[in-house]
Image (tube, rainbow, N blue to C red):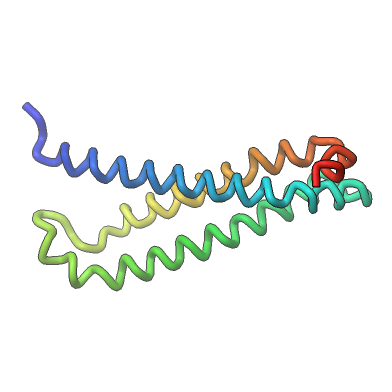
Length: 130
């Protein structure tokens, strides 16, 4: 017999999955737009580790702003949602922490993978592509 929480768990899992996908796509797109800049920095002698750190800082700053905005909006909506929740608290610290960690991890991974690939390309190729 199915648990009464199964539909809610499935719905919240889909929501988290969609957010994870969106964060990943937006960060990957941002890094692809930076390929020319990365190529110029590499051509001028920047170390790959420094360029990778720069890209991660830029992307994680945006992810951090998004997470902070989402938390503020979520906390502002608590009074309105309180009447819709049965058997659970409107503010669960563990849930908020897990969602923040998941989305921050998604943003970091989504920035790291394309940035690592961009750092490995030949600077001449990145400069010619523009």
